[in-house]
Length: 220
Image (cartoon, rainbow, N blue to C red; front, top):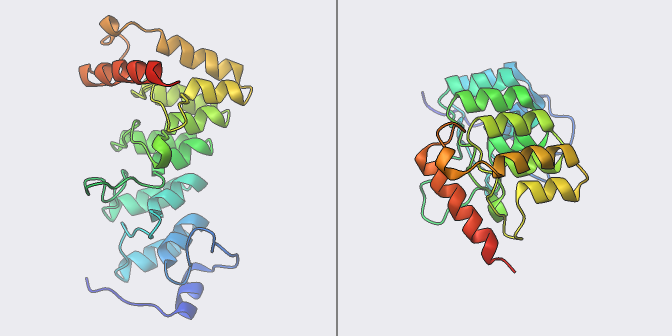
C-alpha cells in the first residue's frame, strides 16, 4: 500500500487533536502517535489504512505503541499489533541504539496492568532497558503499582538490574515509601540462583541476575 501524506490540517482533523503534545512530538508531523495517545481507534485505523507506518519513531524514540501503552489503550495496541507494530522498540538491533522509552515501561510506569499483560503475552521483553538503563520494573516500583510489579516479576523481570545512578527497583520503591513493593522485590532478590528453575527463571535470566548482583556490588 502506498503512503498517503497528510497536510497539517488533515492530520489534526484525522486525530481530532485538541491539545498540545509538543513536549514529545509534533502532532501534525506524527498524526498516528497523536491518535494512538488519544485512544482514537477509528483515527488509528484510518491512518494505518492510508499507509501510516505502525513503527514510526520520532527522533527521541517515541512510537505509536508507546503512546497507546502509556495511556492504557488496549484496543489501539491490538490494532497496531495487527498492523505489524513491534512491541519491543523498533531499531533495537541498531548499533548503539538505546530507546528513550519502551511500550512496556510506559504501561508499567502508569499502572496499566491490562496493557502490561497484553504486551508480555506478545513477547515484550520485561528486561529491555531504556534511557539511563531503566527497566519496566523500576517504573512500576517507583510509582507504587504493586499489581504490575507482581506481574513483571512473574514474567521474568530481573530485580537486580541497576540504572545509571546505581539504583535497583527495590531501592526506588523504598525511596518513594512503597514498603510493601520493596518487600515483594526483596523476596524475589533472595531466591538462590540454584533454584532458578522453580522461580521461573531461565538459565540466561539467572546469569543476568548474577551479573546484576556483581555490578551492584561494584557501585560506590
